Image 1 (cartoon, rainbow over the protein chains, first blue to last red):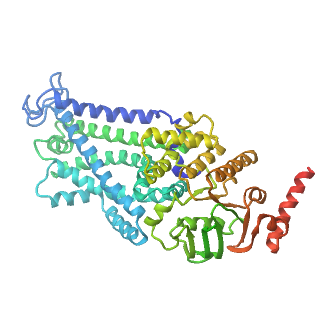
Image 2: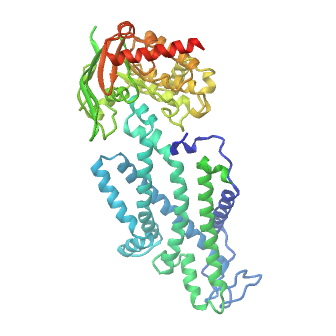
Image 3: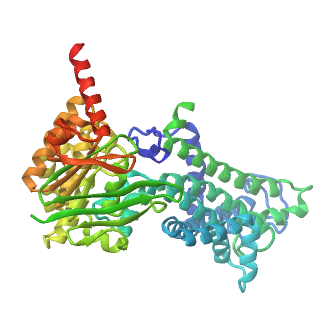
Length: 284
Length: 268
């Protein structure tokens, strides 16, 4: 069993290391809060419920911002945007990227070379820069332009990864064996190729989820993300910048929320890789 | 009897090197032929060329005709209809020839489903499952019902090869190509798998192209042999002729080596 594509096939998979469980817990907690805010928040996120820049108190655990809005409420609501952008852009990038990657993986030599060259050029641009270009090209920024922009920007990486994985899987005897038995291309992809490349793609998606959330915060910080009345951590950071010396909590709190979620996503991805790859299993 | 497989002047080459040179042989319907030779003699490539499944970097010229269908130069789409119904292959390494993520029942089930559709039969779950179970019994897989839900790595090497044989037989091909089907197995299992292949080929009236470097194995199952060396045919004839009185020095050497090995085994 030296072939790297054979890795994910042991049914006695470990249930996951502590890294994996921590990651799951962090991401899960954010997801829970995001859903919770749909039904309940301590205050209305846009209401001026206190004085300006209040210190933390029992009424306002993380204080209030420069307009007197509750910081904790805003951070909780902010996880909603993070989740929507993270999941939405990864899903979009996966759909576009896997489709292109499959086409390239199966394409004839010339088309494959053309696609590979285009992908390499796209990958040479930083994701954030590509995303800013897409936002700039759209008529007005909204939540969905951010999702669209990040999804498109990340799809090139997914496409290249898929292409390589497909090429490797296609070299296996079981593909030849299956084609010998008369399996058509569409069914070949569905039955053999996608299941065998999925574990590797999943790890990548988990990493990209973290990347997308940082990128969205960056876009919002620059004023290119989801506009008001959406509350994004990036915008909270930007707004707290002016008062960071007098009331640092306004900047620290959304930063910590962001970092916890991204670390959680990375730990989740790391644990997922350990589960998918038995050669790394003994390192724990 | 008409010829089921006709190979005329088959040459296979990469950009740099000619791997198979002007190989010709024919296999009548219901006949069994052995293709023998050392590693790298072009046996497996010849088999792959017969199904039109050579890797893209390798090109074939000449003619390979199965039934009435010319294989070389025919687009993949057209060949796909022929694969399975006219020809099926059992590969050398049973672990890599099975999809590691697919249950045994499904691996055998898909070719069954395709054959049912081809023959206009109903392809409902129950019918397919029954056929799969019956195939598993024919290839003597133990506890077929439990086996349905196993994955390839959970069963033994011999059992995997039985699954691969069941998949090939599930297609009901006119021609079965067995590419060193016993090489990766231990001697006891080899004998069982050979007996199984022998019986199945007889029961279903398939033709057999058996590829091997193992002379006793070949002698036990085929009627005619073609000896390949460095991509060229050096000798053709009935098994008896070639084994008892090889005319070519290379075949003579092969037989001599096999005999020496046998007597060595008897001495110890």
